[in-house]
Image (cartoon, rainbow, N blue to C red):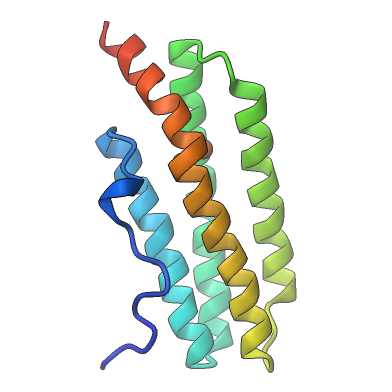
Amino acid sequence: MERKNSNFAVWSDNLSVEIDLIDDQHKVLIQLINDSSHMIIEQDFDKVRNILRELRIYTDTHFSEEELLFSRSSYPHVDKHLKEHSYFVGKLDEFENNVSDNDIAVSLNILEFLKNWLFYHIEIVDKGYSLYVKKVLQE
Ligand SMILES: [Fe+2]
Ligand SMILES: [Fe+2]
């Protein structure tokens, strides 16, 4: 089946934080956002909700992994980063409640917000820790 809107959220090299494990996890998050955009367009809102639940669980896994790297490397800017993480988790929970069965545009708008947040977070905030963490943990 050909998928419409297959490029809603796509990982690209400029998102790399140069830690393979973290890049792989970011790819999964982006794929899940992309998958849910397909399901919104196909108006399969049960599947949208399933994917969002998966995204919520995987986000926890991913954030825990990053937070483990912070504590192992004594990363100094943890508080600010943790605040960003809990903001995103809050937005995911909000989205799960607001996904609209009869308004594709509303759901896609919220999903667009999540995507933009995630891309910004990876490119600016996560890249902020990755060089530091890499350097400290390799020494
Ligand atoms: Fe991340
Ligand atoms: Fe992060």
